[in-house]
Length: 155
Image 1: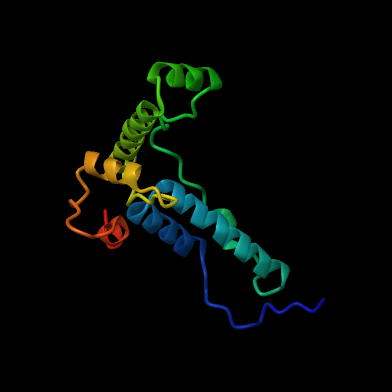
Image 2: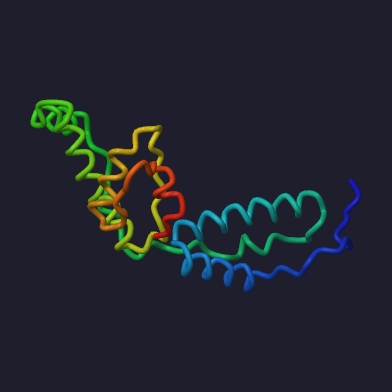
């Protein structure tokens, strides 16, 4: 295989990559910065394999460590059964889900998440209630749809 390291390629140093990682962490989150760094490492690694670069400068940049561990975890099956039994009917299960999701969203925003993204699957009631609980919803008037109400919402 012919090496092509003489090909024109912008200078990319470990220092520049670390600066990019730090910017991502500041503007988004540490997890996003680490993911971006991992993707960049893979891309630069492929450039090395193809002979476009002599070495991978991303490999010399360390991932950021988390400042604190998340307190969130998945419910166990026993906990889910206990919640369903305590709720009694479907409406109470929905109300529990809305309250629990609101707490999760509050934690995410408090910890610096740049925003929230919901998949409603054409059932916007729970999302609307969560946004109201967070103080982020504008009340709907007349025939406005939820889709048009929240389309341009920036958190």
